[in-house]
Amino acid sequence: MWSRTTLEVSERLTVRDLPLSERPRERLTRLGAEALAEQELLACILGRGIAGESVLVTARRLLATFGTVQGLADASVEQLSSVHGIGPAKAAQLKAAVELSRRIAQATTGARPCIVDTLEAAASLVRPHLLDKQKEHFVALLLNARHQLIRLSPIAVGSLSATLVHPRELFKEAIAASAAAMLVAHNHPSGDPTPSEHDVQLTARLVDAGILLGIEVLDHLIVAKDGVVSLRAAGLMRDAQASGASNAAPRPQTHVTARRRRPQ
Image (cartoon, rainbow, N blue to C red; front, side, top):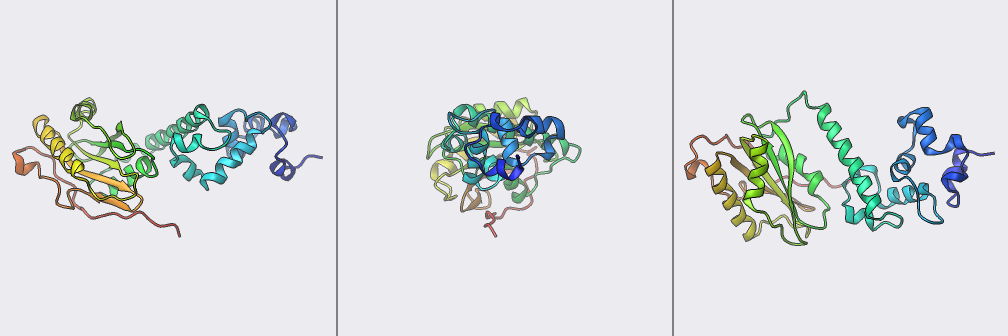
């Protein structure tokens, strides 16, 4: 006699060993996705396991490795691929599913414009895309004239300690989105959010380019495990208005260092 408990604890079972009615895909079709456990939903996304191991075991290992579904969602392709049974292809499938869910969530809340007028608002948007990355990632929050978010655009991925960003690539995205202003952000994989000299110099170049194009760069955030630092709040960013931009958009009202919440 089969039972859900028996199916969950046996690592020797493959999906084909299960009664048809207990297989994740069939249960989803019959009962709906909301009836499935997280392990079963992951099994549906992964499709199949590896030789000698059920996809359900692989799914369970993923959850055990990253602790929660949110931890799994925040993991990079490299981190996912390091889990036994998850190669680059399955890691890409997982990241694609996560990104689709994020876009659906954004579309659902689209009726309520997301206004980015404080450091905390900006940090909450960029953190999920930058924390726990093994390489430096550079992103931009593209805003309209009212500082409502148009979209978050990934701009570049660099090495372990540097991101190669050219102003041309950044402003190409901003112009395509008809952005009036932007905030840029990148991560420090080292865990220390202290701005480097290169960060300060890059920001100055971006501000200058924005003045010429009429798209103000409002701030540059550095995200790391130890917190989020604003170059403007740190006094390391020249004011576009002081540089002669007469029609620059107003800057966010609050500039304070935002620290990552520690687990309770």
